[in-house]
Structures are given as C-alpha cells and as structure tokens.
Length: 295
Image (cartoon, rainbow, N blue to C red):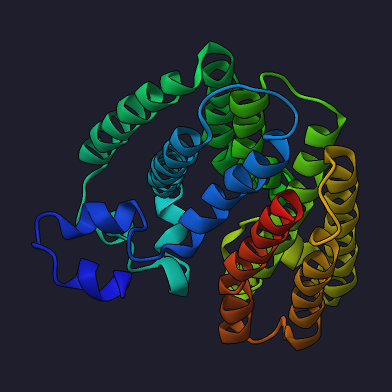
C-alpha cells in the first residue's frame, strides 16, 4: 500500500519519499516497536512523561530517525548501491537526486528530528542524541568490519532506552536486559536482510556477516533469537509483568522458531519475506506486555 502511494506521488517529491523509505515501512516499524515495547514495563518502574504523549513522540522520532538514517546511508553508499541489483534503482544510485540536494534534505530531516525528543525531557533528549551519532556512523561499519549488524542492532533498539528514561525517569536492570534482548533481535533481522545481497556484496566489496558466515548464519540466528527471548523474559520478570505475559511470549518465541525453520538463505525472496515478518514478532511482544500489565 505504501509503495503504491509513493508511486502515485508527484514526480518531484517521489525520490525524496524513496530516500526516506516511505515505500518500505517495515524498517520504520522495526525502529518504532522497541520504543513502544519499553513503555509498558517502564510504566511500572517510575513516573516520567505522560505515556500516551511518549507513545506518539516515539513513533515520530522513530520514523524521522530511520528516514534520516536511510538518507545518509544512501549518500555514503551510492557507489555500492549502483552496483547491487536490489539497490541499483535508489534515487542517488541512478542520479535522480544529486548529492548536494540529498545532504540538504538530510540536514532538514535531522533538524526536525532533533526538536521532537525535547518533549520527553533533557535526559531522554541526550540519550537520543547519542543514538543519532551511532546511527550516523553505521554506514562506515560496512567498510571496516564483517559485523556491521552488531553496530546496527543497538542503533535499531535505541528508542527502548529513550522510552524507558522518558517514562520511568532512569534506567534499571530490567531496562538493560530489554535493550540487550531487542538488540539481539535486530542483529538477527539484519543478518537475514543482508543475505538478500550477499552475492553482489561479495563482488563489490561490501562486508557483512552474510558473506562471512554463509550457511553458519542459521545457527547464529538461532542463538541470537534465543538470547532475545531469554533477555525479554528476564526484563519482564524484573518489571513485575503478570502471568498473562508468558503464554503470549511463548507465541512470540514460536514466531522466531518459524523464521529460523522457513529461512532459505540462498533465496533472496525468502529472506525478504522472513525479514518483513519481524514487525509481527514485535507486535506479539508488545501485546504480551500489555496483557501482563493489565491482567
């Protein structure tokens, strides 16, 4: 639906919507859901910003941060993108948007994104600012290590820390376990995503665990997803979530098992389907937390 809407947008606007990945909303949900997942357990740990306001702000910040991250990623990776089949049609790769305009667009996105977290308070804003620095550094990780996913995972989960501080006022052990668990999930997601391009990446010199691990990626993925469930369980227990949380967490764990079983790392279309299913896992965890808090 989002892709069709972007396709019908005015020609002058369309490349910028594509830079923002408005036509690919899965990444936005993967950026927003960690923040929402942190709100429910944090709500029992203290009294900070109003929870409904925090939920709305987290969505806006997550969308803008992910969009700005995609823009700077495309600016820095435009040479690689032009040589990879899946990314060769991106606006900068084909020259529809020039680099100068892309930098100006990125600056505008960043200015808007910077102002929104101030609503959540100065500490939450400072934590978010650290996240932006980490996100900006991510494109360089693919040039210096085979494990850029280990950097991206915490970046994708950063809103969990921001949300916890905004709602509870400070971090505690439960927040740390939640952040680690969500980061493991994000690392696993990104390894699945990277398998779409591993053949092209190996040719053009993009470094990734998909290229490095090959078929060993599946056991690594199982380990990451197992760590995700364990950390989420510890965070829930320390946050005092009720018994209704646990059967729904088991359903969420079953979703990750399903991912691991159906994944064919040599089929790019399968990798995309499995990756795109991950917002469902996040939604299941969020539903489990809400049930555990209300019941």
